[in-house]
Length: 258
Image 1 (tube, rainbow, N blue to C red):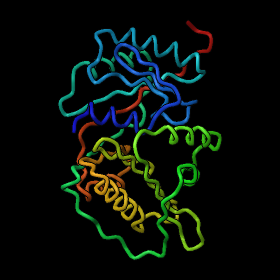
Image 2 (cartoon, one colour):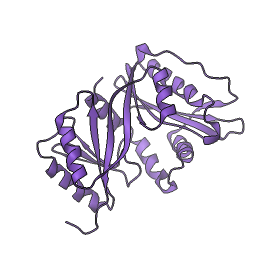
Image 3 (tube, rainbow, N blue to C red):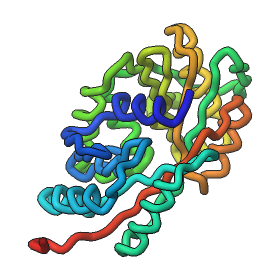
């Protein structure tokens, strides 16, 4: 599995409300609810004129009343065009945010990890119920909840939504997998602060990966911010390895500017 395959799978597994295809990239928009669906995603093979692409992105996001956000890819076999794009964005006063690692696992190499015996109930949930629980655990802006519900409703592939609840029925951890064309995307792993360190994420991830195997998925992938050391350690124990990384470049846009 390579960068291009994962980028394509991610875009369909976690959609946007609106997408505009340009020569050299894709503009994504979802009312500002998260960077993943509100960013310019350059093609893996970058165009020869990133300035033109950048100007088009700024016009588009200014019309939406939100900052311009550009996703910058990098990897072991980094193409010079990505470095050139990042240098251009830095010169244009775009701020670097959220360095993120993209990890992948060949599921035939997957080995199950045992979790502590917990008095919790692992439930398969409807998408809207999952969004509600995930949003609360992540303490996301409540006004974005309806947008996230629209996004998960548009997902391409089979979505498997898990909520781990305590004995009182309160959500204490969430996770979701999207299976599509032999690839399993892992999203929304979140644990309530008071339940962290108890092995809940291990239990959830095991369930999601087993779901992918049952559906015939060959690979699993996920994204995690590089400063999230506990999550990185967990995923590596399962056998996930980093394929490449990315970060965002963000710039506030003046209203009414050309």
